[in-house]
Image 1 (cartoon, helix red, strand yellow):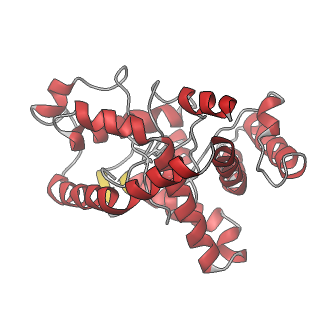
Image 2 (image 1 turned 60 degrees about the horizontal axis):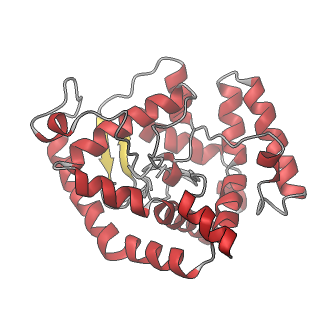
Amino acid sequence: MSDETAFGPGPAIEAAAGQNGLEGADPRSAQLAQSSSDDGAESDVADDFGPEPDDNDPLEVPNRMFFAFNEAVDFLIIRPIAVTYRFIVPTGVRNSVTNFLRNLRTPVILANDLLQGDLARAETTTARFLINSTIGVLGLFDIAADSGLPYHDEDFGQTLGTYGAGEGIYLVLPILGPSSLRDAGGRIVDLFLDPLTYLAPESVNLGRAAATGIDARARNLDTLDELQRDSLDFYARIRSLYRQNRESEINNGAPPEGSPDFSELLYPGLDEPSETEQSSASVE
């Protein structure tokens, strides 16, 4: 799965805010990242003047209600926190938070690698965990990526997709954001695949979920703002982009260029630092 958010539309959330890409921790994490892309997305004409062909959205009325609710929560609570977090916390520290959250998700990623029969990716996931948990100081530094072992994300919704399971109807979940019948069920399975569900106190798991959501939302602030400005029907645009992103993830392809990952929120999605962040990091 990819780095996977905005409370608004649904940061995404990896994480259009990839969303989304919270877009990464456990199923209770906020879908703050909503996926976005101008290259792979349908035209605004299609989004703004009628439903997409085969949009498979029979619950569009309640979905739009939840979408509006999520946007309000994002505007009033999540985005201000994410803006403050990005302003106050240095880039290097934020990157370490991202790396740490990714490392915590390793057992879920490994389980889905194995369930998909992808032994090469399972080997990479295992090696990354061993290297980053030791040399990388409990995952704070992504030493494995520098050694030629790039990060990838997987979830049970993707696993079902690799076996040909259709997405089912489109859903917008309160707080969690864009999803589908298949992916919503996959989140529940991922919860049970995560050892921290059983080993960590509830307060720790909730804190992890919140940190994942804020981290993903902060990394997708500019992308989501631009996406919302350019969309006459933000709901339809997010629905289209979410599906494109999920299809890309199931096929182990890169998300559309410039898009945050919905998985980010659901799980530690975690985009690579933007060019702006990299520049500020070098200054620091």
